[in-house]
Length: 180
Image (tube, rainbow, N blue to C red; front, side, top):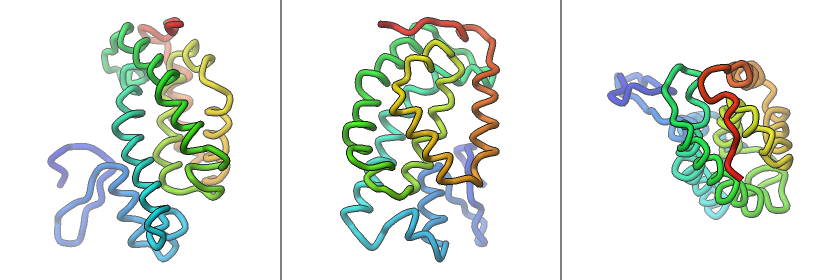
């Protein structure tokens, strides 16, 4: 059904599929009568900002996460790359999240949560696989993640599962020191 062999994937009635997490979230919002609250399509500027945050998450933030946290899935990770990627998160990525997307708002470009928040907050859990990295994550980022979880109580089980996996990781590099 999905030639990319990734999830999430939505199988459609005609046998085709929609995959990639951000595309799936957008599609679900279009299909849901309450989707406008999570993905404001009637306001083209707000929609554009949410789309920008979704694309940024995929191309700028998430590309730094695998080397740090995918060890929890048994995938090999490179310590030097993990350190460099975490430094990039700290120096380049987190300042955009806090200084642009969350500037004067509780959530991404808004005081109400959207699918951008559901896209950005959960992967932060992967950083917990390296406890010394997580200890360096700015409190503002941790508070944002907690707000997103609080705003979406139905996701608690999934958040907690990923967090527990990451926090319980004791494999190679779990105690790696971040670069200064």
